[in-house]
Length: 396
Image (cartoon, rainbow, N blue to C red; front, side):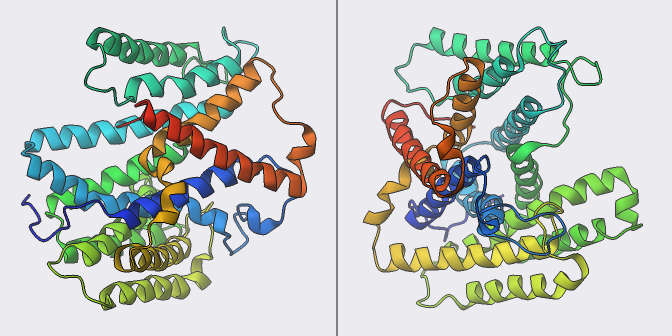
């Protein structure tokens, strides 16, 4: 793979801003999920609703941003002189880490027999959420090497032990991927996309071809009795290509914006792709509906269209008009996305394990619950600011 000579080599503030905003909304909706009596437009839509809310857009936005970052990540490693082996190893480790964390998170939620486990499920969940922090923390250069190894390998040992301490509700020992979890789905989508991106050297038209293939595979996998649906391996691949379509859409928009010597005043290809995403979603809607739960192509394409429009606005505001000060509020999350995703789970299981009630039931219903969710999300941003200051940053 060759270095992209025309690709921007500076930090793109608008991508960071979109990531930060997405994570803030993600923390908000995750906290809001446990609040009763909130409007339907502030929840995930049911599987058969043929509709989506802004909540159903959070996960696709994250996938889209992952895709936007791919060309920069590969270019940076090539410019640094990393070998093919180093790049592949890093890619596989990152995907595997996301999948592993996702599986542990899912198993912490349900599927266990509490009466047969040697450790209380709440403590099991606390350790499952907390151990990725010492394992994947980005330790500063002056951090004692011996302590770093103790923390990393100690965390790995605990995760391995947790696997054997887990008793399923069927009585079997060990975990199963009931589903991959949000992080696991991101890991698979990232893996499929970056492997293809590397093989085709990140060429724009080949990435467009991959996007079309992902959409087709997604659609075929939802057709009852299709060849793909009847084959477990093919259905497995097509299921993850559903989310890979959003990652590849992000790659395409990133290349259209930043893989050129001089950016145009109006980026017509990007506008054209926003229309294309919307048109594909509109055309396929009568056949598959809009559903995040089912992972329909209309959901992925409408999400890609909205993400493209949102990013174009942020690009215009921040890169063209240089209005960036407002985004400082969201940047702590953008700099540490994995930790801020994990930390609320650590807090939840800590409170559950030690039977701590932080907020009264009054804040678990209606408008007070919505307000609390906003307050909690804001608190998490300030916590991330402190973590970033003291070099507590997860880096896969």
